[in-house]
Image (cartoon, one colour):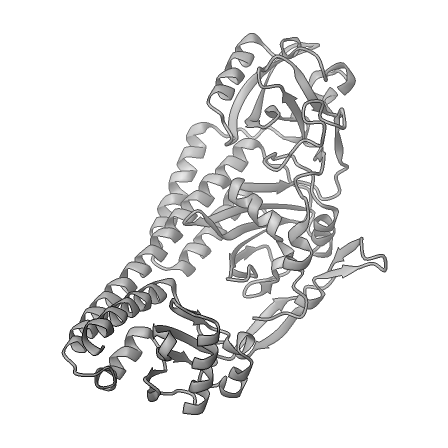
Length: 509
């Protein structure tokens, strides 16, 4: 689909969200050197943990504030190069004696990063390991019983809402242009509903999406928090801002907090859904009032998101296997039929219906030695000639596919109804010999969560910007677009093209 303003590519994709140099206040951040001997940097709220101001902690030996066993455990973590965040209980030396605190630990370029929870923000949960384990097993059983993608998303939304207590949980899937559609939703009666709505890519811009590939979740307990800066401001090792990309406590861009405010959301949490190590979608949680989740609770959400990712991967892989099996059978039949014919035109005409089925096309055409034959719904011959000329000018040597042909081939606007999508197989492109499959225009109505062309609103100086205020349904009818060509279809088409190229050299030359 085409939007007037692609903020995701032109602006939001360049935002340095990892260089905030501040954290949210519900925890404390400590950065130790690579030897775990010295505390390099701390967050300015470190007194909430150690009862000493930041200037009395930064630059001091780690042994002044951590027990020998904790330092030993941290050094073991460093040796293992734990770029993944590891929950670790550390013992801190405080005025009252010793205090055990659950922390998240991971290695960064500058050293060892510790994120400690502040107990003043978290009520006693009273959940044992057995309780959490049982709950995870129940969720796993529910999700794994699902047989369709829709059922998986519905189960995931329901289970995460029950586990976390968020007012609303949505399952959000990205399309090829990174717009996200809400596939499932569980919400309290007084929460605004977004089921079925699509949100533009700029709502979750490229840097944020890249962050989710590396980080399993993102928690904002209270959008009205005050930033806590790091001390000293400049990292004495790197001589710059510390990279907080993987930090749970990393502060949030002001524009996103404003976005939550416009949605009337006070707390939010998002967890990733991965497919083949790529971001497939998100689990988005909203709450009307501040909501603090402990590291344990966040870990439960992470585990559920992993369960959901695995199930979605299993379902989509199964669909791909079925499609590949069907394509393989059709490919074998086509090869057998083509090798027994005396000419390419004869082979095409006798197998045109099978070719349409094989390529899932509404029409096919063969352009061979200056002649054109067609089957099904195709453009006029003169239009096909123009298309072939364009393909040759573009030096298309491999299978070429496009589901929005009029956007890349201006002359295609005259036959958009029959051929908004093409799959072109160059057999002898220098001689204009092509096999082309066509797909018709599919009018598609998208219900946007607010006008996507107003997703970002700039102030007169063009440096300060704000998210849209309204998420009222905005309807768009998408034209000049055909059904997408699946990767399995393109791969099978390329395999068939390779056969045709070799067969032509062996038989028809």
